[in-house]
Amino acid sequence: MDEIERIVPRRESGAAFARRYIEHLSAILDSLDVEAIGRVIDLFCEARRRGATIFFLGNGGSAATASHFANDFGVCASPEGHTPFRSMSLTGNMAFVTCLANDFGYEHVFTRQLRNLMRPGDVVVGISASGNSPNAVEALRYARENGGVSVALVGFDGGAMKSIADHTIHVETGNGDYGPVEDAHMVLDHLISLYLASVKD
Image 1 (cartoon, one colour):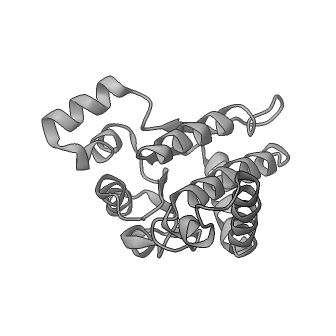
Image 2: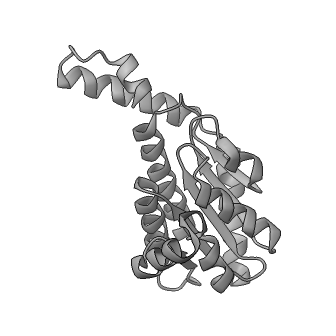
Image 3: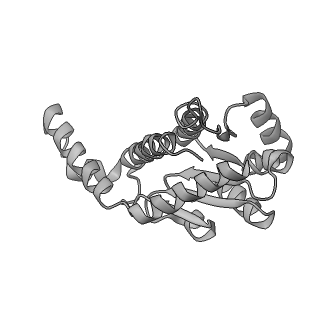
């Protein structure tokens, strides 16, 4: 929260903090590249038409966002009368995640799952505020090297994931601005899911 602490002195009231946080977040959302968002939406639509699976992954708060994305694609974006999305979060099976972390190292908890599950043409979405989470970086690299399509949802300066991914939605902020980046990623989840729910394949 370095950027938030810089723009909102601690001596200000809770109401002032709320106002400035909302203003800060609004400016970040206004700066998003809607063309990049559109390209990712098109990619998801095309994946649904092909019957490809979309895998979501992340750490910490981004792990929760990954699960939320998979839920929304499986329910909100897959209404009755539409071809459902094949979507899965790689953060949900904690027994498997801890097994892989213990046996192969935490940096491989996603690549080892993709090794078992990903088929050529599947989509792998890595979510990370810094763009530098080693396991997410490795997952996007694995996808690109094994016939998958990689998508990065990142913040700060984009990190390593921005340069690896086939498609990137970059929430540009100062380093350490975790809350607003994660807020923006959840906005993207709801924006994209709601749009996809309206589009028949």
